[in-house]
Amino acid sequence: MPIRFGVIGYGLWGRHHAAAIAKAPGADLAAIACASEETAAAAHRDFPGVQVDIGYESLLARREIDAVAVVVPNHLHAEIGVAALAAGKDVLLEKPMATTIEDCDRLLNTARSHGRLLTIGHELRLSAQYGKIKALIDAGEIGTPAYAAFSLFRFPFRPGSGAWRYDARRVGSWILEEPVHFFDFVMWYFEALGDPLSVQAFGAARSGSAGMSENFTAVLRFPGQAHATITETLAGFEYHQLLHVVGREGSIRSWWSGTLDRTLHPTFELRIARKGQEHVDTVPVERSGELVELEEQARQIVTAFAERRLLVSGAEARKRVVVCLAAEQSLREAREIPLRF
Image (cartoon, rainbow, N blue to C red; front, side, top):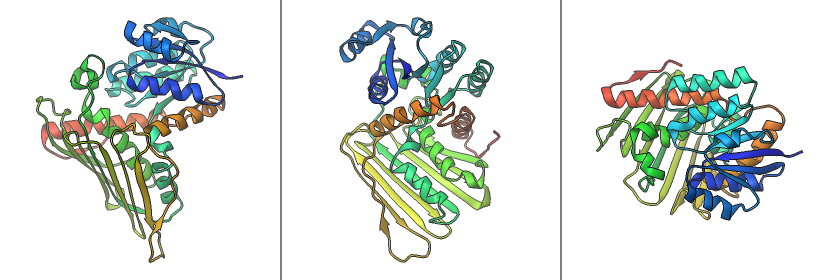
């Protein structure tokens, strides 16, 4: 029997989530909740056989809905996630988990008390490119990780509905909006070392809000003298990522480039110098990109929910929010911040 999904939120990325769920074997896209008449009309056009509501309450009241994907502005993640869990739905919640630690804990407690699954949309883990890097590290191909450097050169953020991405009260911070993804996979790559010990961030914000820096760099220190740097500029053009991971016995270099983050035909490469080898291998990657990863996430979430397990736990995602908030504190106070999880 298929899992009947509702999608809450039908902005740019909500539409992509809905399309991915509609394609996923074992999933039935049963309802969409929109914030406006305009987006509701778009949902009707895109999915004429699907129930479309304005506001999320009526969707959550539908007993036939098994699970929901919550794809709304960041400040609404906790409110709608908690309501969905309390209504007895399993939840796929877009990153960031929430904009405060208190709201992360509310989500975790609600999932626990109602016996529901809460998984967070850190879909880069499911990438045939970035996920493969984790598999190479775990297989010991470069030895113990010692250093990682990730950079993103990109066009400015789209404003979003009502320009929410440019309102610190609603986005939380630009660190929570995108670098949270990069903190996630660096911490995932280095998980054998343990949680990071500290973060120090650098940047400058035109708005006066520390977390809204268009040029941002963070340095994470890990046990064993390992460290990672994450750099993002929102003052560039197109969408270009570069990742280096260096181990004690080998190294990995990977990049991805497209005109947009949702480009269907990007260019990308993954290369590795394996331990004990003098030559460099190119690792085959068939497809890569956020739209590909959303489809893979939808496919995997159907199986995970059916098997009553998580793809990315709320406990893990909470740690990423801790790091983002500490990076913002570092920007305000111009110092290294010890991390306490």
